[in-house]
Length: 170
Image 1 (cartoon, rainbow, N blue to C red):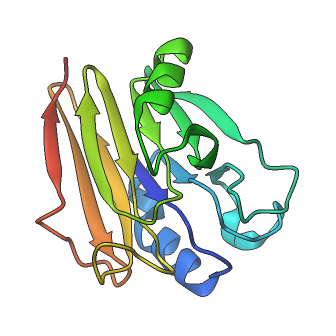
Image 2 (tube, rainbow, N blue to C red; image 1 turned 90 degrees about the vertical axis):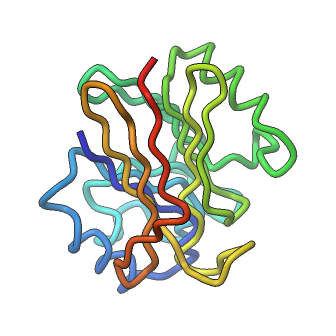
């Protein structure tokens, strides 16, 4: 299973559509972790699972989503309501509460992933204003029978090997 994950696009449409176009033939789901700053019916968001971020004024976006794909449960949130800039524990407890194995979030604009116990946290960074590195980033999650790999790309579609991480499925 492949899942494309973006966040914090802050009004960018052409770039968002380019990323989706680049990967749409090879993904089972596309997630936007909030702060799109676009209306829910905007064509750049069509076919995506989208949550509302702190800069989104569209009330039709939910603040959180729990979504299951191919037997894997995702908890999707922007992160501002879970204080993700300070700790992963609030999002961890919510993931455990809803039975999610993967948490997708944004808000900090810092690309990265980490596993806490059996919960994998993925922040794709920002395609608008990255923090902690220069590259504007997004992520691709690949799950097979034994491993989960999170690949990070810059906005031009170049793989960022230093961020890419593989985890054994527990």
